[in-house]
Amino acid sequence: MVYKNVNGQPRERCMIAAYSLAEDFGAKQADIARVMDCSQSTVSSWIKEARYKRSISELTAEIEDAHEYVQQLTYDLDLKDVN
Image (tube, rainbow, N blue to C red):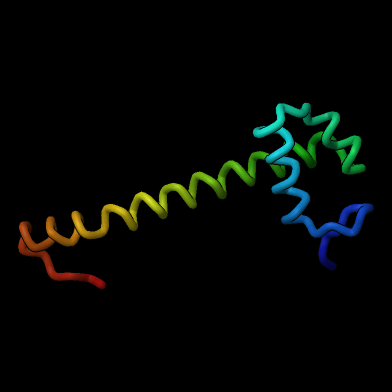
């Protein structure tokens, strides 16, 4: 069964909405929970998960940006290209 809140929104959308309300608008977790009709601990978990996903995304972008440099270093070290 896929999670949907009382307004019919899927879990991922609720998670991003909770994250944005807290991070971008400064809303309190208890207030977010009230308007989304869930517990404050659920909102807290969603915000933590969204932060984690954002960190992964940022790290992935940094790795992609550094790929050319890493490739050059492998040649400088006489390492085989593993890709």
